[in-house]
Length: 94
Image (cartoon, rainbow, N blue to C red; front, side, top):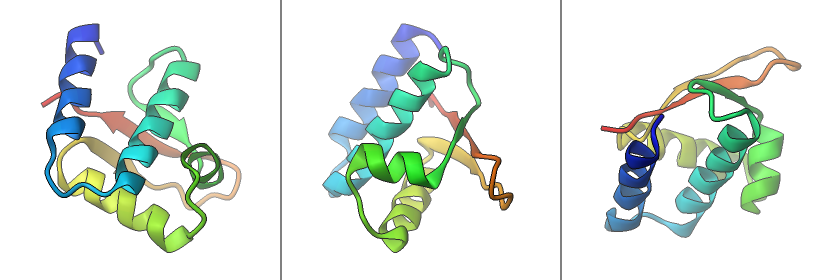
């Protein structure tokens, strides 16, 4: 993902009306993991890491944040039901 596409994606999050702070925090946590994984798209996330980085405490909140980001077309999310493997996320630029 190019810097311009990333800038567009962040701009979409900032301009999204009614987006709760927890959704923005989850998105920023995803960006951090994306950066740590050498900006590969798709990349792996784990619920535990996202919750720790974003500061959310509830699993229900985590899932609603993921669903809303997915419904807004900001990310593609492929859950992994394996306890050791992370779920796969792809940042969508448009």
